[in-house]
Length: 260
Image 1 (cartoon, one colour):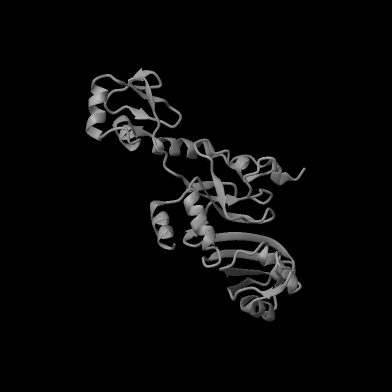
Image 2 (cartoon, one colour):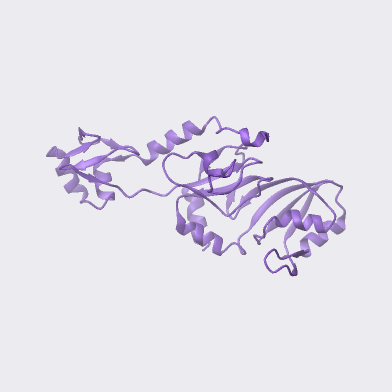
């Protein structure tokens, strides 16, 4: 069996999930307000009148509600609107960016995220590693995918042979490859390419063609041996270890939303 399929959740997953649970907890008055059930002042009154329970226990001022708990007012269940989550994962090689859990090594099972149904934004080849974004927010997925041919994605690539200057020039100018849908030959968009070592280069794409970098290299007589994505738009992989994930910061989300 491919070792990649035996990868387990990173050791900090439980800690990250607990941190998220604490972050998603609400004081009871805020929970009732966020649900649209009543105002904050009315929520305080209901608690004081001993009409609010959390998992069957009477709530008091300052009580916290955690994910999965049941809140009732006069025995009527109150469901709060859930905040969406936005996650950056350093995807390992061997994990497939699909929500189809019938496929071994799918990203949903790998994440095993307990609080929301999350799904990847775009894709990253099974044979590649690096940054992939996941979220429970379908709206932002649609916005990013609609802009897929405009936003930047940055990769570090290692190839099988020593790189010649003509390779960098041709990759930058655009390489003629086959359109997977129409089967017609067409040139990729111009992009930024910088050689880093004799067999390694950095490339910034504004296209999202299937296995684009591997196909471009193949057309020029090179085979990709390592491909790692390090940036999507304003989101950087940073020092995130393979298999680990983090929540996007508010600053990252604010910058991201301004790009649509």
